[in-house]
Image (cartoon, rainbow, N blue to C red; front, side):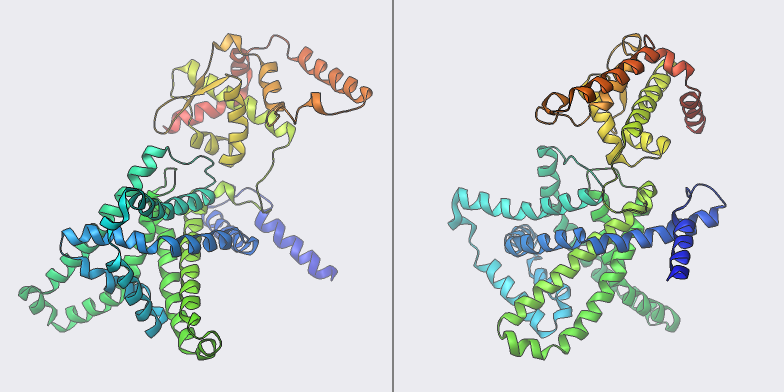
Length: 455
């Protein structure tokens, strides 16, 4: 047992013992890959991804018919509405013959849905039910990307309608163009050549993987309320696409051997298998999003699960560092940092950094611009911002009316000790302004200069 604990301790020290920026590039890449695999396994084991996948299954069952009905009405204007059933059959192919029955039932529901009979209220509920699935997807991806704020309502509405209305047209247009090109006589003659024909046949087998991976990558780029780089989204999309296609093959094998489930659940077996496949599909989509997230944000690869909490001295250090960076850039006439640049300069995850920045904003020490992405500027004259104000602000972060020192019945001796400690802090930094801090703080000046040279 002792030997096993020693080995586990050594492995833990090798994987998590130092920052991954130190060492050769191959070592850094290998270390990040190992950490990514471990963190992804931890996220699956903790169950948040599975819970959100279950929520998406429930929302999908409610919204699949209204969602496809809207797509059906759009595609009907272009005369390609008959392609919905083949697309459903491809998605439900892992269910075998039962998938065909589910697809036929959904298509019958869509054809029986008469929008004119619904009225204004019914049409509004129809739109809300369809949009709720898009909203649920965005909330799940924002959770993975640690984005606390959703998009403004207007942006969400416009993006959701774009996906619901334009998305089906683009998909079926791409499929139609591919089919048209393949039917051209010159293309057929080229495909009759042995080597070229074999190559196209092999490519056609890979095409489902390419299409699914491209769809996943598009979702990772378009849906989260944060800028996502193309390469991480592509890697996440390829990972999700390969897993989804492989899971479809494995699930089809499971369905073929699941006659006992049909005997037990009778008519409900189709619904249960359909829900299981929906759950796996959503879980794979969220897993691919996690892959893209950790590739773009390696600073979130830390050993312990859950949201890291800042200690008091970390808050003070971050608060002074943020204000020093803002003041240093501002005085030098250089662009001030954005939230993502703060994350890169300080090596701290975004959601922990937001605790400090939002506290500084609430006390009117920094202000966010309307740029995209927004940057942070001093909210007042630098000579009027003191170090004691910054320290007091970050110390009080998270307090409210019911969780404040005045409502905590502490002993008089404890209050006296705390007051004395704070008076000592104030006396040591008395009169020190942000201008002087930015000028004296060698680490902040060096960080600003290094960032400026890299721009």
